[in-house]
Image 1 (tube, helix red, strand yellow):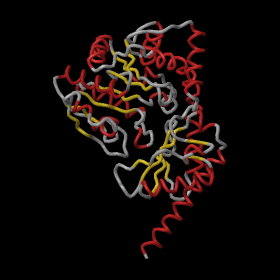
Image 2 (tube, rainbow, N blue to C red; image 1 turned 120 degrees about the vertical axis):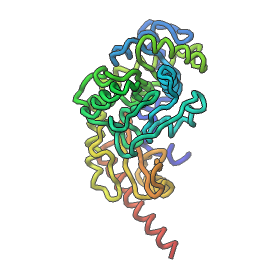
Image 3 (spheres, rainbow, N blue to C red; image 1 turned 90 degrees about the horizontal axis):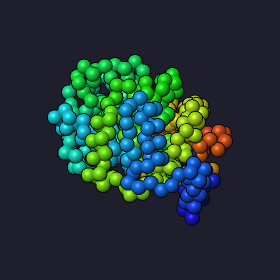
Image 4 (cartoon, rainbow, N blue to C red; image 1 turned 135 degrees about the horizontal axis):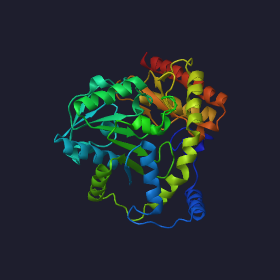
Length: 367
């Protein structure tokens, strides 16, 4: 058995339960029977309509489209906005998912170019906007710890885009956790001023897959054509759709609790040596812990923590700007809520101790 599998607790993805495939399928079956649902074909039917209409209403938009992946949904959004503007350039923050995780799909699949604006450690803001095919705004920005612009900054960004006649697209993969930071304003208020919104159904919601793209009637009608062209019109995606409907309200109800737990955990960790919480305090149900070592050193320390505490702190340590430091992503989901706070803090204290020990070992080896 590998080290991760041997641990009693695991902070890595998935963040809400680790049911076996058979248990997950049984849960979907029970929901199907309870709701009187049946198989749906070609991404349409009663449940699909319910999920799409629910998303459109929540975001204050006219229509929504279920899509098999967020990568496909966001590429479609960028392409439509750019074509309508007659430009092929897209404004992206350096932490954008499109730049880091999608193998340059915006360029290779959609013929777009990227103008990268802003600094890694700042949120997207109005001063970074200029004329373009569209601008992507990630709420919250994953790769700097779930950072958000203030409400005033967000409104200024929307106003500037309106002045520039610049289409705004929201990468709302983790939008579900943003309401507490924005004084519990509705999703519709947050999304107001955005021409389109992408929502993930597997990250904070915990469904087995899928995404939603939300916008105007004509935008979504065009998006449906692109979904078909790109091979995203699946024959029977209903297990993913049923699972999303099953979990959506349940997970949204618990989101304030997850956010508050992220904040209290971060507060307990902020004085542990060598660990820097970013942002501090956390603004959503996630934050990063910046560590002043290279990723491979951090991974060795993580393995030692697992051996001593039976807690697996995470799959990977991100290092994008500075190879001499890295970040561990901490996401508070239902799994983390099951771990006693004292045990979590103790595990991170062991991490700090092992980092110090590794530095000493490296110094001795060089002598």
